[in-house]
Image 1: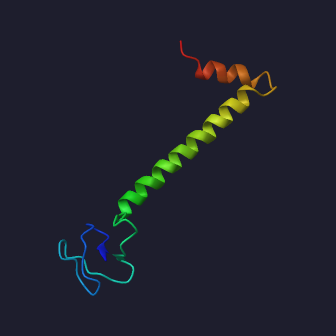
Image 2: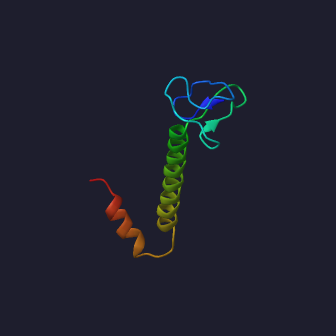
Length: 86
């Protein structure tokens, strides 16, 4: 198994990480994944943050272009004035 804190490979029956000393429990230990790569919690958080930002960006893009193409003549000039570069 691999330590979820430092990624060091340890014996399956180990109670502590040999590198950082983390006490292993049922949830703390990470089993070796296919290909031998272990994904840490920080890497998962970074991935989720990036995906979240992309989703938020796509939603903003969709709303902006939906409003720009709408038939409401009052909203379109207001957005054009706000987002225009002078």
